[in-house]
Length: 89
Image (cartoon, rainbow, N blue to C red; front, side, top):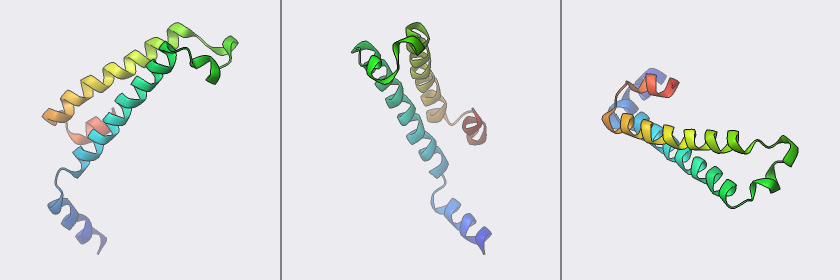
């Protein structure tokens, strides 16, 4: 019974997996922009104690996360590599 429902849903919404991955990628980009914004506005000190904060590491990882958003959006638009590979990455 479950395989019938799963098969029927896949036929009704063939790109549902790609749509969900696209939404997750938008979340990734929004989160990266949020991290960069709180860093540039100086609000990061309210969230992380000064002795545990590494500014260069925080900013570089936020920028890397934003760059990964742009890389993955290209892959999602082209739908390459396959969905399963994109989800694993």
